[in-house]
Image (cartoon, rainbow, N blue to C red; front, side, top):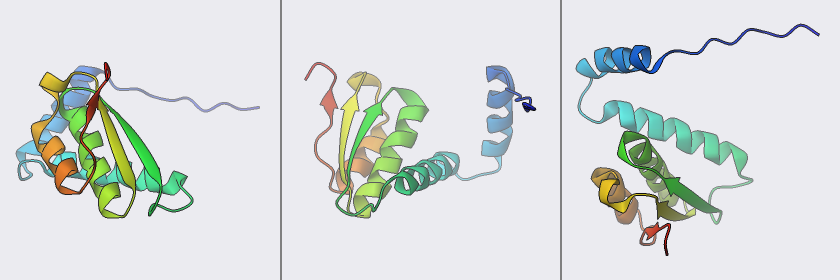
Length: 112
């Protein structure tokens, strides 16, 4: 059996590439692309999006924002989306607003 080699990039390399890309894009465009990709990947795992239940485990910062915006996209397609915020004080505000605007329930914290 022949195994293929996988290559990983350092955090600094990824951040430098993101900074270069973001410099040429409107604010928030990269996050929207990530959210669209995540929502599409989740939708591909579901038999159907409408009526499905999706739970987001949301960290802080931009990765959490990606998840919240993806959840908003899924909610707009009819999924019942719930979010659990690991650090509510550092949750991405724009992503939270998008999730609420899409009709998802109020996010919960891990303590309840």
